[in-house]
Amino acid sequence: MNTINIVMMIYVIFIITAIFLSFKYASTRIKRTGLFLPKALIAGTIYLILSVFGALGWFFFSWKINEFLFFGGLVLGLGFFITGEVILLTIFFSKRKKWIQIYHASLNGDSN
Image 1 (cartoon, rainbow, N blue to C red):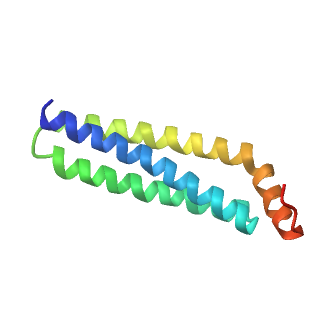
Image 2 (cartoon, rainbow, N blue to C red; image 1 turned 90 degrees about the vertical axis):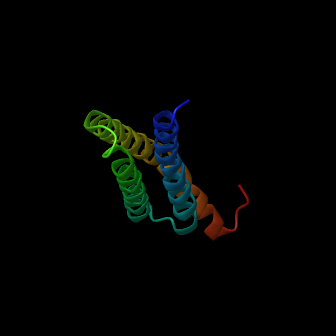
């Protein structure tokens, strides 16, 4: 494996990790506060910022190697970003009622 393959793997793993961190933030905060939209927007912003950091890292690595590698990595990152946002929003809206019920149950002292 050469350096380009290793850096590409790190880039992809970084973006996938950003999805999991954003999801974890939103799920725990919605369960604790019951506020869905603000916490979902913050999680989306966290994902955006982490994706930009990954793209900047890719920019600094690949620009001096090859322009095609640079643009290919940015297109890959953009594709992962859009796919990740769609996945996050889909999961958020599908679990919204459950998370808010957990919040209300914690207010009432129910252990369910």
